[in-house]
Amino acid sequence: MKIEKPQPRAPIVTIFGDASTGKNSLATAMAKNPLVLRCEDGVHRQTKKLDMPDALPPCRNVDDVFAQLLWLLQEDHGYDSLIFDSASAADAMFTADVVEKGGKNGKPAASLATAYGGYGAGYGAVAAMHGRVRKAAGLLNDRKGMMVIFIVHADLETMKLPDVDDYQRYSLKLTSAKNANSIAHYVDNVDLVAHVRLTSALRGGDEERKKVISNGDREIVVHATSASVTKNGLGITEPLDFEEGTNPLAEYMATPAKKRAPKKKAEPQDDTGDADASDVDPADFVGEE
Image 1 (spheres, rainbow, N blue to C red):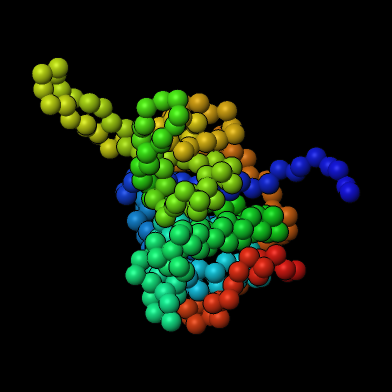
Image 2: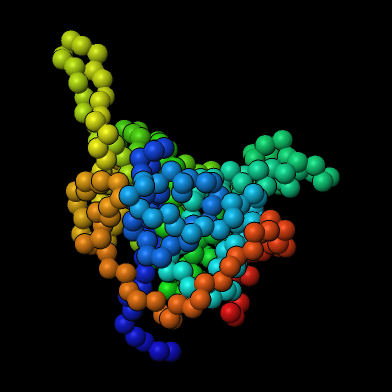
């Protein structure tokens, strides 16, 4: 058994927020030489202040997602970063796939709750798919030295704790259940979780109906707070101002050099949907390269 000090590596990051808050712009600004895996086509909405990153063909189904991850693992493509856009869109594909395949006698299930016999099995199948995505990201990070950025839509979840009243916090828009937590793959097992949001203020007197107003300015929350699933290990304790086209985290995050010299970029095939990825499982992501 060899004992050694851990070496610096590229970070794995989750960026979440509401629509049109600049998630893709932040991801592109943070990433070095990125490639986008498109479960949805949000990259074209990024700010024009940044160059448009290269992108794989849009994923049409679950098979496409895992075929493209496998391609990234197997090929010497030369990209330094992967932007996964988005885990929420992938979640919709995963849910549809589980419902389609989880019924009896070859028929679709009535709902995710009844898939594979019910009792949470359908939710567990969706969470397992997210686990496979996160496992592939970890291998890309470890074997290829790639930074991985997950983009996720924002949602609210209600916290029920034994010592305080129930309250809501900002979270990720993913399918989850008590014993099948898809969210954990993108929160517990990443280096930083960033919430991109509009700055806002309340307007109205004591006797008036108060309104939330915003001038369009944005900020990034990455520090631990009871109001959000955000986190970082960089010593950031306050929201950071965010102007589209910039990376407010640049001074805090230093991306180490890749483990191998970049090679000539391989051209991904545009017929990904025809790839035989139906039997891709975690075992496909742990074999020898």
